[in-house]
Image (tube, rainbow, N blue to C red):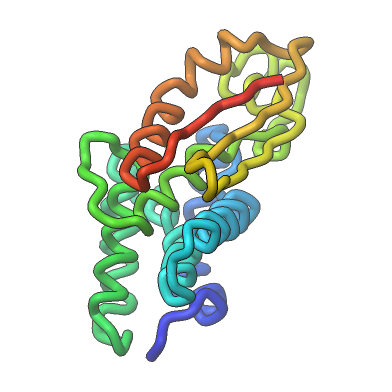
Length: 217
């Protein structure tokens, strides 16, 4: 079996894991980690890989990792990256025609969330940047005024009305440009919860021999 994003999206096991994760994180009042987030991360991972000049196969692997990276959350938020990698391995390690493809996807999934893990593959770096750059109003599930005022994660996400990630191969830069509505929150609030994620994007970009730039407003 050759792993493709199209086949992965149709797999009932993967869809079950994603559904359970969405249900679990909604119960905890988290921002969206369901198919909206996974579509964006999968598409963005593949886009970054393509802009970097990676092969078609590597682009597809980045897209698959993006689609599956969060599906272990229903087994526990803290170690969700390990759970997702384990579930992916159990599903496909004996079905895929290339174990190297499976191992690289697993590596990317495991490393997407913890900056104490070494980045050893470009697919991993693509996934990290794609995942950590997804901040936007559409991620907020509970859009009530009271919730947005009281929850800094929802408030910051809700304040971001435009999000654009570009790769400039000539200048060796990866730029995340955000439009933030300061009526809802301040730029300092953004940094108070996202500085770690932006630092991890920078680490991933450095691995790719690129600079990571952040533009807000």
